[in-house]
Image (cartoon, rainbow, N blue to C red):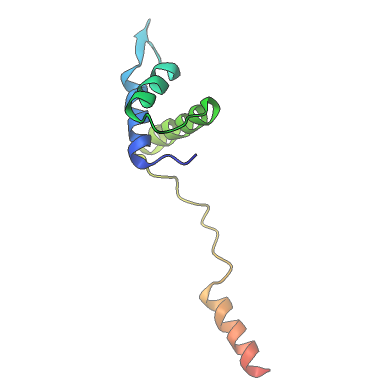
Length: 95
């Protein structure tokens, strides 16, 4: 399942809202986060494993970048660069 930005934001806020600091160490409850999510979005069918993994990724990106945006891609250029297209046109025109 792909979560919307609204759902991801709610997941992140719920996760941090339900955190507890015990002896100087923060602990977070995935179960409470999931329960709040079910109340807020009752029409969404949840899979525990997928929810956990999505939340883990959302939190990791937020801690690394300070926002909810996806990490930038690898920077690999698309196969059809303007140079490749021009080269192909030259080959086709010469034949």
